[in-house]
Image 1 (cartoon, one colour):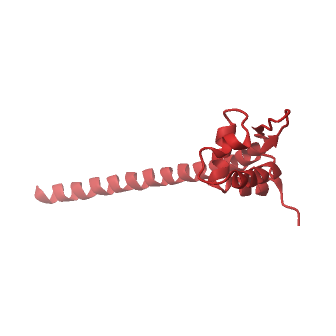
Image 2 (cartoon, rainbow, N blue to C red; image 1 turned 30 degrees about the horizontal axis):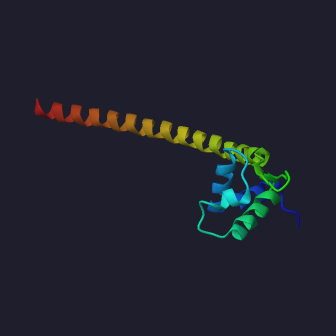
Image 3 (cartoon, helix red, strand yellow; image 1 turned 135 degrees about the horizontal axis):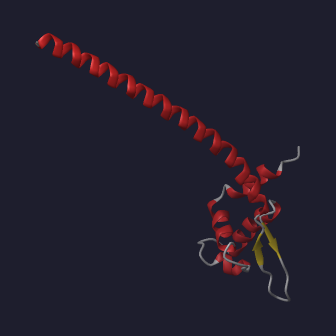
Length: 125
């Protein structure tokens, strides 16, 4: 069964180390050794993370003599952003409806409070 691009992207983004690597690559190209520096894991472990990111299309690896830079490929993130945007709109609309409903309840409560006060004031006279 083929996995769709969005699933590949989410799978790659599921790991905090890979997200941190992408954050670093957003600043510019870096080698595997440079990417491995801040992590308490081996260069080989970082290399495995890079393979996952590469399979997901989130990074590309180049070759310039002995220098093998990695660079961010942000195109797959557009699919994630589009997917999230759909649900953001859904939740905003739901929250707007909830807000309207709560305002209506508050309005009714206020009207009932005024009626109770008028009844109480009427008995005092």
